[in-house]
Image (cartoon, rainbow, N blue to C red; front, side, top):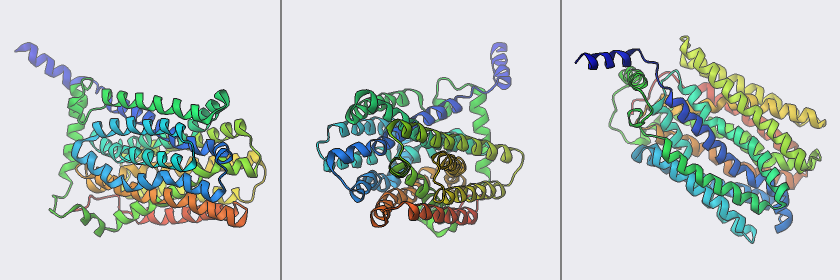
Length: 434
C-alpha cells in the first residue's frame, strides 16, 4: 500500500513528458513532406512545359488540377478524422499521396500527369483537418497557437525544402522523373512512421506519463465547462454564424497569395528576373524558409500573449491584422522593384508575416471544440483550396493576356486587404452553440 501511495505522489510531482510536442514536430515533418511533393511540379514545370510543349494557360491548368480533388475532399476528410480519429487518417493519407507522387514519374503526357495530380490532391486532403483535430485533442487552449503553427509551418518549410531538394535532385539525376520517384517512395515510408508514433488520445501513447495525461485532462475539463451544451442541430448549423464564413473566406484569401507564390513564383523568377534552376532553388528556399520562421514566431507570440491573459479577440485580431498589412505592402512593392535581391527580400518579408496566419488552424477548435473540429477544419480548408483551384488559373490567364505579372501581383495585394477584413470580423472568444 505504501508503495502505491509513493507512486501516486511521484506522478503528482513528475514533469509532464512532452509527447504532444514530439507529435507536432512529426506533423511539422509530414506537412513539410506534403509541400515538397506539391512544390515538385512547380519547380519542374519549366522542364515539363518544354518536354510536353504546353503554353502558360495549360501550365496553370495542370498546376491547379491538384486542388480540384484536394478541395472536394476537405470536408469528407475532416468527417473521417472526427469518426475514425486522426491516427489512421494521417497515416493512410501520407502513404497514398506518396504513391501518386511516384506514379507521376511514369506519365508519358501532360494529361496523365494531370491525372496523377488529381490522385495526389485526393490523398493529401485529409492531412490538415486531421491535424487540426489532433491539435484539439493534444493541446491546451494556450498551446494551440504553437500547435497550429507547427502543423501549418510545414507548408513554407516544405515549399522551401521542396524548391532546393527537387531542384538538386533534378540537377543530380538530370531528370525530373527520378526526382519524383525518390520523393514519392520517401513519403510512403513516412506514412508508416506516422502510424507507428501517433495516437488518438494521450493515454493511448506508451510514452505519455501520468503528469502529462493529467495536465491535458484538467485543461480540457476547464475548457469543456465553458463550452455551451450541444443544441442537437446538424453540422450545417455552423453556417448560421458570421465567424464560420469569415474563417473560411479569410483562409481562402490567405491561400490566394500563398498558393499564387507556391505555384507561379519559380516561373516568375525564371522569366522576369532571369534566375537559372540552381539560383531559383536557392532563392525559393530563402523566401519560403522566411515564411517558416515567421510562422513559428507568430505562434509563439500568440500563445505567450494568451498565457499572460490576453483576450482571444485582442490577440488574434491584432496579430492577423499586422500579418495582412505587412504582407500586402510587401507584395505590392514587388511589382515596382527590378533588382533581383530586393525582390527576394520583399517576397521573404511577404511570407514571414503572411504565415502568422497559420494560427487560423487554432480557430476550428476555438469555435467548435474537440468533437467537431475536424469537420470545421475541413470546411475552412475547403475555402482555402478554392483559392488553390482558381489562383493558378487566374494568374496563368493574366500572364497570357498581358504578357506581364504586374496585375497578378496587384491581385495578391487586394486579397491581403480582404484577409484583414475577414480576420477582424471573426469572434474568437466563444464556442458556437451548435
